[in-house]
Amino acid sequence: MNIKKICCIGAGYVGGPTMAVIAQKCPLINVTVVDINTDRIAAWNSNDLSKLPVYEPDLDSIIKEARGRNLFFSTEVDNAIDAADMIFISVNTPTKTYGKGKGLAADLKYIELCARQIARVSRQDKIVVEKSTLPVRTASAIKSILDNTGNGVQFQILSNPEFLAEGTAVKDLLEPDRVLIGGDSTKEGKGAIQSLVDIYANWVPKDRILTTNVWSSELSKLTANAFLAQRVSSINAMSVICEKTGADINEVSKAIGMDSRIGPKFLESSVGFGGSCFQKDILNLVYIAKSYGLNEVADYWEQVILMNDYQKNRFSDNIVSTLYNTVSGKKITFLGWAFKKDTNDTRESAAIQVADNLLNERAYIEVYDPKVTEERIYADLEHLNSRNPEENRELLKIRQNPYQASENSHAIAVLTEWDEFKTFDWQKIYDNMKKPAFIFDGRGILDTKTLEKIGFICYQIGSGTKA
Ligand code: UDX
Ligand code: UDX
Ligand code: ADP
Image: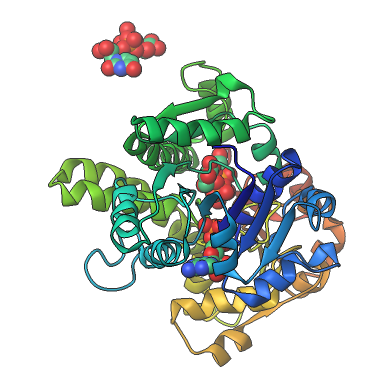
């Protein structure tokens, strides 16, 4: 099928940037991104490109080029579904917060609603593409809903998981390591796969477009995220040993990364991984393993999450014990709230857990993050339900610059690796802090030698050189 019109349901971190790049690279295809969230759609349509709901480097220029030409953002979901030849499902699949599989399984409520809506509205044959990360065999559930509730039209279901990382979304979309497309091996299935291959082939080299069966494609996405998260937990486990033994995690990372079998990427020790995918996908994998009675497999992957929780809690425990076993009434400055640099996304950010732990110890926190909004930070804390919203607002304040956030502070904690933190006037910060002035670098980005010369007492994750 020669695709002329695409509809993408879900205008979030995945749907928005992915469709922007498809529209930019395929000017002959009309791409409409729909969402039920009217504020989000309004923000995507905003003339002020700094107001786009997702911050990603270079995304604004792509939106500027394609929006209004062949890229549209709309709340008219039914119309867009009806008109499209190909529909991407890119809605959220959070971890279930209720019922069977609570805390582990993916909540497929939004996916199912989409499938039912597609079935109800569609009047001609369509290709439905799963973009959201989904448990293995979700495609069969979608197919069953489409076939049993539709108007007799034919649907082909493809799995096309997104591997983009936030903060580098545009680059990852323009130059992906690979594009994965899973589909049926029937004649119709192969035809659907080819239609999607043809879209990507407009800018992705053919040898990077892999086609598999649907289940392999779905499972590959979970596996990729589990392996990546496991690397971070593995290096973080070694960071603790470094701190105890006098080894240095950066030296260890470099030494092992030069082994071509291991490779140098994704070996940065940190206060803990965050983001919308890693934890959710591993929990999902654990749930799938348990549901097949594979307890050893489930325990193996669960350990990646337990290690990550340990790393976050260890960071806040260390702040408390270093500050003479009490932070009650003391001001701690947080540099960074986002789960990593170059994004305004805070989902599962380590900063949230670290802040909650310190607030439980009655610390007073002031946060500076260059991209995260005040409402987002308070919403993250409220979501935990550890204390009432008024208390959160009293105990934690958001500041517009690091100098204000660190005035009279007892300690600085670096939670996100924003580049600008390295260029601050650290002497000025030191002069306005309480003494002794402590820095806890949870990202290993600061030059501790220079900071120590200024007078700071420094702790850096994985650095055992002072052990
Ligand atoms: C991840 C996958 O990389 C991507 O392929 C998938 O599509 C979605 O999930 P994302 O969550 O956006 O992407 O960011 P990623 O760069 O993978 O970082 C995840 C977390 O791990 C961040 O908190 C990051 O700070 C942390 N991390 C990453 C480390 O602590 N150390 C590292 O070496 C790498
Ligand atoms: C290993 C390290 O590779 C080497 O750097 C170190 O100096 C000594 O230990 P070795 O034990 O000789 O070397 O062999 P290796 O090729 O690493 O294989 C170890 C085991 O892992 C073998 O049983 C091999 O069959 C198995 N293996 C390896 C797998 O099952 N799957 C793989 O993908 C790779
Ligand atoms: P992701 O990181 O996977 O892109 P987001 O939460 O950023 O996740 O985006 C998912 C989007 O999907 C949200 O904006 C949400 O409003 C939208 N959404 C969820 N269900 C539906 C639906 N049935 N119809 C349209 N949009 C939906």
